[in-house]
Figure 1 (cartoon, rainbow, N blue to C red):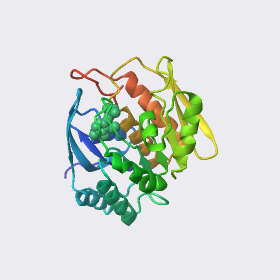
Figure 2 (figure 1 turned 30 degrees about the vertical axis):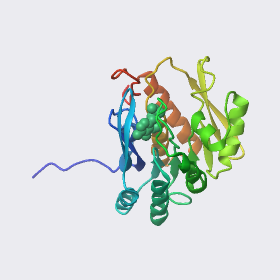
Figure 3 (figure 1 turned 180 degrees about the vertical axis):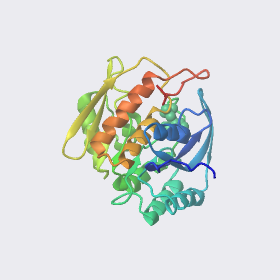
Figure 4 (figure 1 turned 90 degrees about the vertical axis):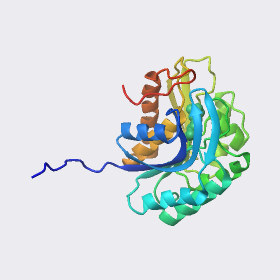
Length: 273
Ligand code: PLP
């Protein structure tokens, strides 16, 4: 008789995001982070990007109904512990995602939804239509347990230019006003001459500063994707938001510490250490 298998089903997370053909960011990075944090990753692809470590040269969006169908197919079969979004490309795709999530119970009081409001690559290549910012504010953030903008995204979404810690606090309040239960204002782009990098978590009452080391490296491609995916994985494992955020940050710090050069541009962070 054949040997029986011994695996147990891990917590499951779905990423709704775009691809990066260079393998540094997007759904590929998400799946690596989920595996490293003990979760099984599922995907709903929103866009195929033509991309390497030097930049993005093409964006090809997936029809909104196909994005929605991926979400419904996965959720109709597999018990999801958390969902995260990355590159969503444009308003029709966001609207289709929101409708699909409402139909299958993702977001709000249902499966925890982490929104990483990806707007551009680290080279400045656009990954979101300008007109879609409003869909983030009105449709996605109110359904989210956590939003994880970086400072460029905060400027676009909340109109706050963050140059110091006080403005980071202000930005957290404005972003929280859009409706997520928690916001994490990532401080990676703040005070780049210091050797600490402080992310700020806010739940509408309490601010928590999460300091971490700053590394002198250009190989941080996909670190935002990794962060949201790691946090979503810990949420799927039943960890409360503040602890999931702290564990996600710890994962990203180690992954940046072990990042590696790739190609001629920005290399990825590493799930293996
Ligand atoms: N490409 C895709 C498909 C992404 O989802 C992301 C996510 O942020 C990026 C590129 C940008 O990554 P980075 O800002 O690290 O270059």
